[in-house]
Length: 387
Ligand SMILES: Cc1ncc(COP(=O)(O)O)c(C=O)c1O
Image: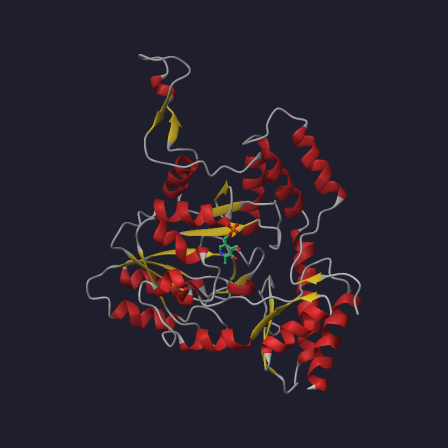
């Protein structure tokens, strides 16, 4: 029996992280200050995008994206049911309608052919956008989505919360980083503690589109803008204008300092995640009780390591008894009571529903020790040996 809890994901805070936060706490800026810009610039460069906008969390990032892309009541947007509900909810915040499309059973990602068939049948042209999610850290082939989106005049938001540092290869064989803005109009990230980069709460939007960048900056702070040209007309230096209805979705400077300090170790953390994933893949290959594993996939950022197993619930409970806190990602979003009220029901997304029946996310985070991982592996094997 392991004496301490092993969670499925965990933040890792170093003495240096603490020092960086304390420096800000002793400074003049608690909310947006110099670390915001530094974090934004460093993050944009990490993912290879032109612009980055730091916001208070990943959900705020999604909400601002939907606003910036002008989602209105009556608009429809396609996303995957195997995601955290925020990927879909941002459309509802703007009064739009969420259209779920099924997943690819091999990759667990939004299935492009399902998306295509919805678009082909959208005779009234109500579908305005697509939100593919780099679920678990596996990066969507965004080039193919771009081609599809262009064919049907849609925008793309890449939900990259699980995949900082992840990538895929395009048709030219170029390595395309998640969040690089090469194909998606906007990408979003979260700095929730279980994610690659922890800031307590926090989010980032990346894009190569200057116009969207400026709209987002404005929306992040109440739609308020300083108007230097007008300061000396009828007003004074205090002058500002609220031009659109925005929000307070700012990140604090101490969160940005933490995020920046964590970003400096992001590659190290990602390498460790890949190593853990490879060890799991090796340990679980060719076992009859494992139906499918995340596998060794180049460019996968391994936010989660997922097994599809027999007797999932019994295994989950057994692991809890042994202090291993596995998790299930995700209950399909279309089966949430809120979305069922819109008419979605069991049977609508057969692959997502089948995936959900057997999936379990086992511990993966950079500070997971080899001994702890061995304990997880042996406990899972023991469970099936006893059955
Ligand atoms: C795929 C995905 N999208 C969006 C979010 C929302 O991010 P946040 O929790 O920072 O609001 C999360 C966070 O859990 C997520 O996993």
